[in-house]
Length: 335
Image 1 (spheres, rainbow, N blue to C red):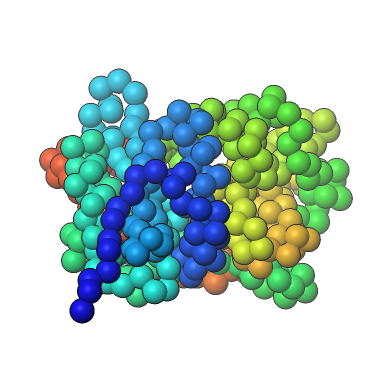
Image 2: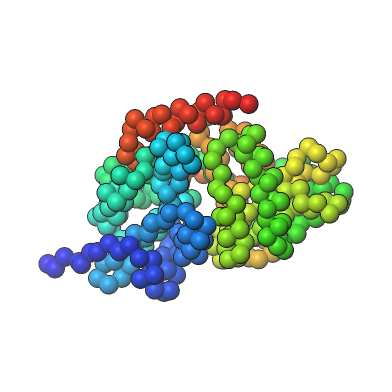
């Protein structure tokens, strides 16, 4: 019996429009593996990689990601490969093809990064065996998926307190506006920087990434405006007809009476999904199930279904990985 011809390619431009469409329509389809996402990551200055499996002249699997690291000496302890969303697999892709692609990624990146992490946004349990055989470790990680196909059902599942805060914010004069210029992106980013510096305390992408997202119309920037000032907003990439994502959300919460910018920003993306026939809102993470995560409580109030699609990780440099992990833990403890 003739074995299928299998090859791994490194040029996303070799994938035809039809092949991309087939991949993105698969059960693992997600915005962050689309050609649009690859393009804006590159344009924002991040180092990117793309690997595709072609079998008998047809692309059957793709994974794309970015290499991220902090500046200066910290780069030695923070270099990481992040695959947002998880790889794209066609239904007919078999176990050997999955394993081959995942192993190839390790061989290509093991000298460049401390670890490789797949941040899954869909169910990858059918492919678990391939990840494990290739050497990856599974880590449970929660998320919320919200059905936005029906307004009545959506509001009914949302907590009464959050729905009331949305209504109060609008009644007080807060409005939802689409970003109109690059200056508004910068204002939004400044609010986001403050949030990450004071509370989140994890690395935040540079302003360039957000500017490229807006310039390329790769995501919706739904901003909250009050008394002529931008006081919050949400960055929401979209996989047309399928999913809208809460990638980054922030607001000047607690600074204005009866105005709740972070809550209104989340609602803005939910309502956008409803008005544009996008059936699912993806909250993009709710923390580890065995660890306290205050944002999980916030996200749970919007009525989504709690899911665990987890993350797969391969550590290429264990000693540096442990040093980096302890440094992050120390940073989060400092005030």
